[in-house]
Length: 228
Image 1 (tube, rainbow, N blue to C red):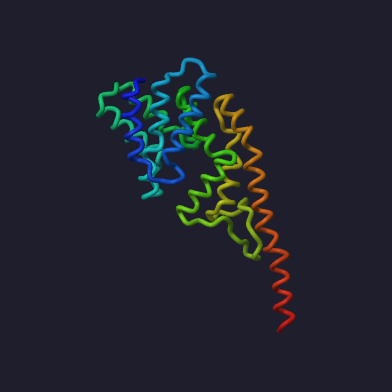
Image 2 (tube, one colour):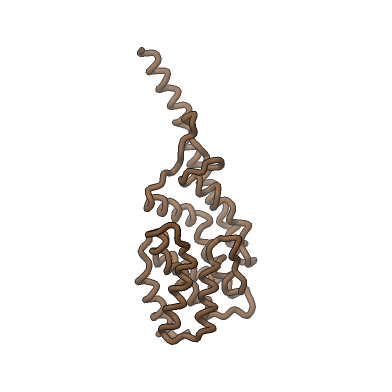
């Protein structure tokens, strides 16, 4: 890939990134992670991989405006349209489209080619570990969702049996389960190195939130009862 081609793709990507949790720096991290993974895989079409990494989230603004849309599906078509309108080969454009379409975690549409699997793993590496926690908190803040919810008895829900959106819910239903869903050995190894940071953060935050809702709340109730 020439520098001129890279700049064409990069400029289009930059024009589409408006979400702070899925910003240009996320794109670069995914791209660089993909380069780390690809060096340990055989027969990788580097131009396809680089293009798919740069354009994999160009559908985010559409999903943010309408949550019923899937950014992977929207972005795949946007990338294909951009590539074909700029003279890229049909086969190349279709390959990139398929990589982007399957980069989101969905059992019904798993990645098939090595380039698609590398993109999937590189993107998921940015959802695990400390970075994954930070980006999830950013996103939850953007859509005004809480850190946690309370159970009917007033205790803090850890998110496990809670279908209401929150950071704890996102951790239990998504972040905690990602580590066994990598396709490449390098992706699995890099994810495993990051896992303890996410586990420790969730456990520490849950403990810090739960303590005042139990002991502190009990103290307040005893004071109020005493002064009646």
